Amino acid sequence: MAESAAPSAKTLVIIPTYNEKENLPRIVGRLRTAQPEVDVLIVDDNSPDGTGDLADELANTDDHVHVLHRAGKGGLCGAYVAGFRWGLERGYQVLCEMDADGSHAPEQLYLLLDAIDNGEDAVIGSRYVPGGEVVNWPKNREWLSRGGNVYISLALGAGLSDMTAGYRAYRREVLEALDLEELSNAGYIFQVDLARRAIQAGYVITEVPITFTEREYGESKLDGSFVTDSLAEVTKWGVAHRSKQVRELGSAMASLATHELHESSLAQAPARVSSSARKFSAVFKDFSAQLKQQLR
Image (cartoon, rainbow, N blue to C red; front, side):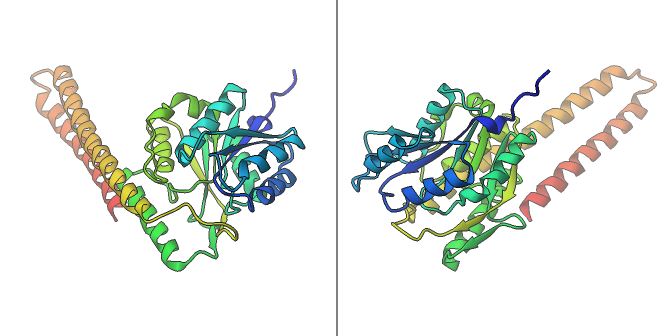
């Protein structure tokens, strides 16, 4: 019986573009050299600098390159959602996110795909796990990013170091299970929202170290509103997450008490209640330890 192909054998890398005419041929060329077996989807938001026309030229000379034109600048979240839907409709098993500006090294894509092939549901190329690094970023921007990610991790209890990262790989099952239309479109926060929803749905996200290099050409699409919009959204999600944890703990303790008392005879009640108290204490201590760990 022949072995089934690895999920990464059917991979689509989605590259959103808006005014990336200088960067696009470089990143596509590097990707096609590093991973010649994967397909590429360029999602262009009607770039006024002619990026869309250049994308069509690349697609006309390479069967692995495809282009999706959108009517206008609809944002990064909308571009990725459109790309995900395009890829899912065409049977791709792994769908990846990659920036057009060269900040995500195509030569490191294998790290993400290897993790998927080893059974992971989704993979983030992280700047902040051991082995990850940032190159040519202003220190104030790096520390803003690091600090923001620490806050996000603490607020949501996700256990990830780089939830704002945009270098990712997803199994199709993860994206199919989520309502992509509900993703927050505030700045780049949809990356956090997508990871948060995947974790809540029971999927496991792992991180692999990557080198993030600041763009050499063109202008960053990131502005100051990202921080304000993102942290406001994360704070709202964090409050809901912590409230849910407390409710679940209370429900678990009440259920345990009901079970123990129903199972006990009057003669055994004191011993049973004592046993329940010890169990409650253990559960509460475990919960408290987890909460303290997250709030450090």
